[in-house]
Amino acid sequence: MKPLKLRMKYFGPYIDETMNFTEFDNTPLFLISGKTGSGKTTIFDAMSFALFDHTSGDERDAKQMRSDFATPNDATEVTFVFEHNGIKYTVIRSPKMNLAKKRGNGTRDVEASVKVKYINKEQENIEITKK
Image (tube, rainbow, N blue to C red):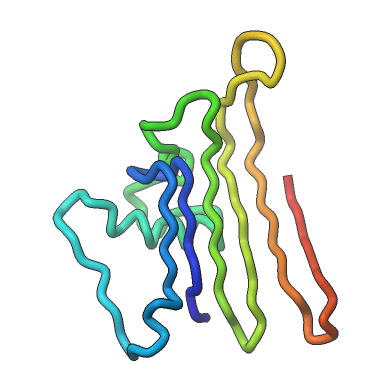
């Protein structure tokens, strides 16, 4: 599996951050570095959450990854694009969260959801959704 792009919206310390891993295509290795608490592990948590619905370690529950910066109007979502065996996949996952009602006052529970999109070898667009 080759990571291509990762977008984190209201996930961990990130409000809306996109990492484009294709910028490193010409290098055999790249390093994710930073000070303690700067969000390095959250990058791996986001990838793991997108793929498996849980974080990369036992210390953090995926439900706890909703950003403290998020308001009831801000949906938490991770989009992970990667390539595997020559096929590009896009996974979009959101945890269960409490969001503002679309009409009226108050909030509502929104169930977790995941969507996987790819183009198969027959060049057909495939989309799988689970809510």
